[in-house]
Image (cartoon, rainbow, N blue to C red; front, side, top):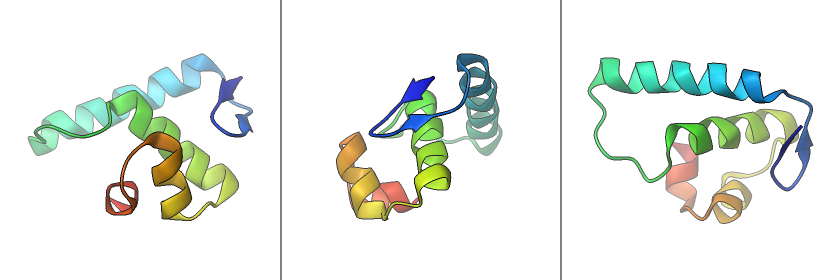
Length: 71
């Protein structure tokens, strides 16, 4: 189980796989510094899809601004 402020019924291997996809996409796009690491970005996206929280709630949960959560 992965935990945020809710439990996500996903395995660690699922998170690792999706994190790898995010990392490869960042390299492909030539993305520079980000506030969140690829794993945290992936976890935030999965939490958004599972719970449907607002971007303000997600941002506060991950310690980033609302605009960063939206992006």
